[in-house]
Length: 341
Ligand code: AQP
Image (cartoon, rainbow, N blue to C red; front, side):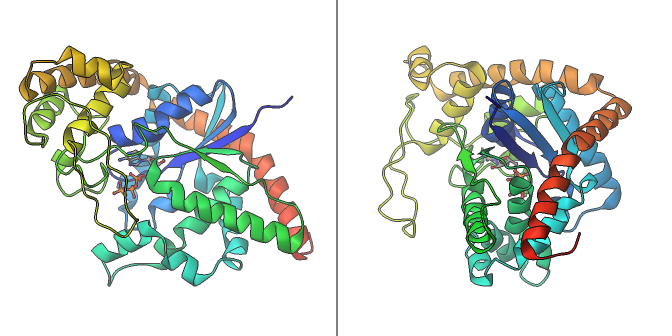
């Protein structure tokens, strides 16, 4: 029986952080053993907000190095640059003819990002979910490992796939998201109500995968905590409805720090509570900094040992591997909509 396929990607923008690792890449590393895996550096997505050409060129290589240093194995998984396979943009155009403007207007990511810069928002940002749908559908992807913030985009991917299939006949596989409970939403160290974010204004929001040991310790020391002194893991109270404000009755800042600790050390939150019973936040934070540094040290050694040349070769080989799949799917789509090939 052939393996199921997974596809996922990260934008070469900002500083990749623990949220990107714990919410996405960590799962990819595990899943690549059991799935036919495709991981993309989504440069077309990155330019949906203004980018400096020199910086983005460097970032593309940096993100690929991060994939490799985290444990994505090019013998098991295809790693490639999105713009090296033009079929992504072409399928996006065809899917654009099926999506409704009202559907895209409902996308939370678009609403958040356009609110920050109302005047300067480009069409690309609005169309981001359709390009993401094209990325996923082009490869008959069954499973998409992502963080919680991308669930809405997977939903619209499913809607578009169903809509196309209904109109033109069975063509696209309907993908399922894959998320883990603790890692799906790593929150900002400076604000536990918002996700850890690449585009955060303050560097105290995130721990970048390339942060120095000194920066990690400094940021964790400064991370906000909740009132009280006990190291206690509390789950969120149930939400009455999505529109209601997020009321955190427990200790959301501490919960987030314990989640990070737990995911990086493979200890259950309850074990961490026991480890720090009777101890205060300062001691817990020192322990957490140790866990983060112990994770980042070998990661950064691998990252620094990779050369641009070898990474480019891996990216080219990845594109060659996936191109025939993309071409075949796009031809099928074009035939179905009535184009002459
Ligand atoms: N805080 C997070 N917790 C869990 N998962 C997260 N992801 C991102 N932040 C968290 C997941 O990482 C993958 C890469 O997503 P991306 O390239 O779209 O990057 P991003 O950080 O979501 O988005 P931006 O637009 O570059 O920056 P911000 O953060 O400012 O919005 C995805 O699977 C995502 O779910």
